[in-house]
Length: 423
Image 1: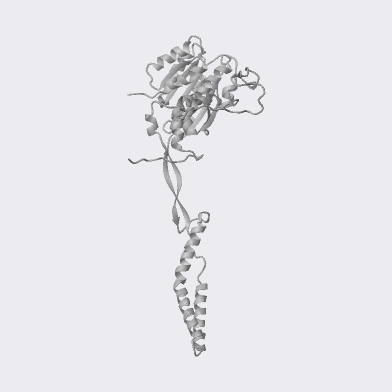
Image 2: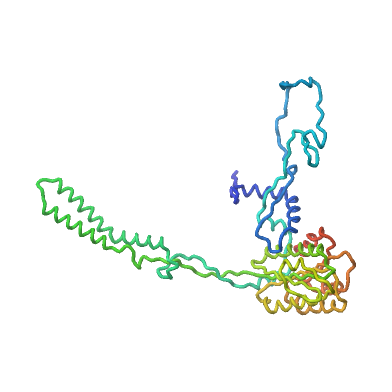
């Protein structure tokens, strides 16, 4: 029987196979830690992995060992309180060696911290978005921008001084000088051998010896006249441009910031946006994020102002939809960008504005949008905006809406929106 052992090492010189096996065995605990870590991240923070803590008791493995046998007697010097057969009570909780922390001390007076290890960025995203997929990806397959990237492609005999390959040029120079002087050096070696024979022979032959020395000197002068570097030796680094097809997407974040949206509601929306951004980066190489907040008027802002500013007054949702439509027309051509949008609201809107929102979505946004998700963060009964959006959801396959009541619902709702479609 032939066995193949994979001994590839990761960055910290640990077996990749063992690491993958460990992640599979503790997947439930890791997924729980990953879902909790989402709320601590910025929307565009996807450059790092995550520290995962697993209780030590969950890492115990069954082992086979030989049991203790026989009768043993131990003598403890200095014992003046106990005799054979006495029983020693365990120290009470909260004192006598148990420590001041929560819980009882272990029998041997020692404890174990949780086992902590770090998963990489790719492992983090694989676990977070397992069994999820972006819907309506047909547009992603055709809307691609051809970018160009320079690659090294050997050397060439001409080029700009900045691309001069010094080491390669010196190698060419050495090869040329060796080839041009090799025959002369061989001739010098032969003449020197003859000169040694003449100097050792009798009688002396000074004229012949002088002639050979002159010939050797002439050959050495010819070798010295070979130039050290020549334009023929110069080599320049050659670069060629290769096309790289890359897809890109823009993510619109729309949120109501009127007086009815408290900070807790905004935090729930932020966690949903974090999940969406992370998910998009799994599919697209370049993801732009546009933040649009609105009350009675819409405004494009940065991330900090988007989540932490608060306004007073009423709510007109159509102002945000109109701004999104204008931004798409001005900055994100639909033949070059894949467009996603997520709208968060507590459901409040002027009654006469909700039909206008429905019309704008159907005619100005959804025809150019890959996917539009609306989440309503409220525990109250739904109002006119939800009712109008329900009419869109009945026939639009790139529109989805969900109701989030608490923080615990976020990840489950996200999975329902982006679960893989089975045939």
